[in-house]
Image (cartoon, rainbow over all chains, first blue to last red; front, top):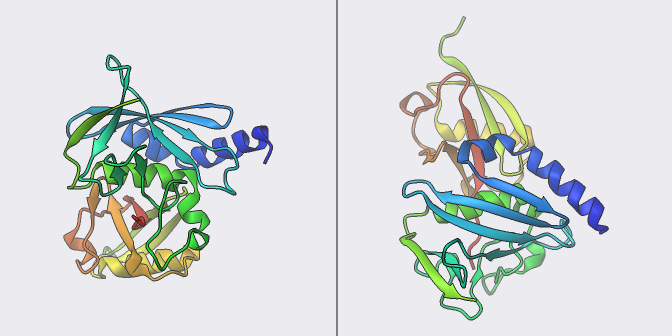
Length: 145
Length: 83
């Protein structure tokens, strides 16, 4: 898909969830096909930064990367949840969530069974936020870049 | 006017919205099913949660036992797949 068309589609899809973006105080900037997202773990105000690469969106799920948060610029700041969604024990670390490019389905499923309701950027952001607020979450972990 | 009927805005993960009129004596799952039908969700509703703010609502609870009020905005959220 042409980058301009992807960018336009992303903006359209984000506009549809602007209530949610405001309510949860996510900060989202788009540069071309990449979204830069700031998301808080609300009870502790712990801040996370992500780059979400949406080349080929929505034909291909987005790729999500956690980034450094100042002042620790040499290490990516990841949420730790006992390796449930955020697989920080892997090299490289990845997010194992339906709708995200790095998702590894259970043996009997295939990624072909993912629907637009999972791949949609609104769903992806909401699911990451949900994982960040899951009882398994216990704080940040810093991984060298 | 039936004071037990309230209007609830149900939004989906991708931002679609429907306004559902529901009796507060019904269970939460009744609201979920009505919204799913209106939106055109064909998957099993038991795969979904209904979220108000940061709270996941018990599908078996009566609406009047939850914080849902007339004009509330809730989210019908499919439980994500984790590999």
